[in-house]
Length: 291
Image (cartoon, rainbow, N blue to C red; front, side, top):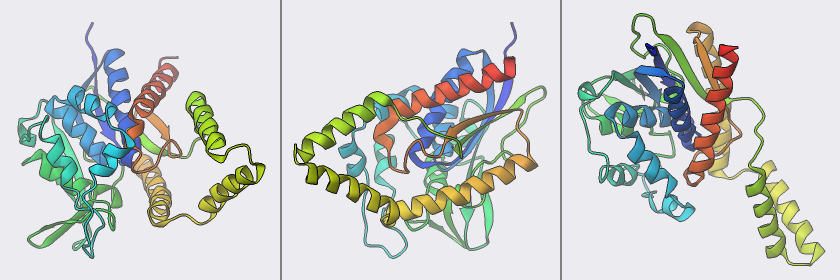
């Protein structure tokens, strides 16, 4: 039986974008043929490695990342225009995923970045895949921007977090969007949550005052978020609204949503949980469509 062709668009979303992997796997499992991909920020990374034919290798690498590994990949700098250089992680990726010209990928691929000098989108559809990824993922104030002649490039999510208008369409395809900034409830993994609660209780000991202090500290963290948390919360709100507007202008045939509460920007050590979350979200959306 002929497979249903789709054009797939993956949103920005930091580590939550790992869920895109589970979505892709479920789409292929259910007989859809991905004919083209586009993405912003983390969506551009997953879309890029998929288009280049290295999604399996990328997934295996992510599944082996621990919290300490994620921290080690952050090449901190004292630069005035970013806390992290953003080069180390891509150098590491190139040890198992070689760079590739976008025009030589298995399927058409587009990565979106933002030119903040000229206030416009830059869409990469040719040239070095890694150059496109570096520009598309440069979160302002967190990662150093990419400086080129007459342009300064930052994260694609600044102007187009869900680039539905940038994916190449084919005759008879369905437009599929994956939004990891959806304002929907998120039910945490109960097993992991129980283990975390046990660790906190053990660390607090049997002293009830210590336990109460631990709870109070957590509440204060929510009321007064730190630098990175504050940027993450502000970004979530902005991108959520922009994604909504994008979907009103370019209505997808199938929308797959992941809760924006499922993880923070740098939660790459939660790969297994996020991939499964993407798989379940895709399955749920496809079941609704089929019914």
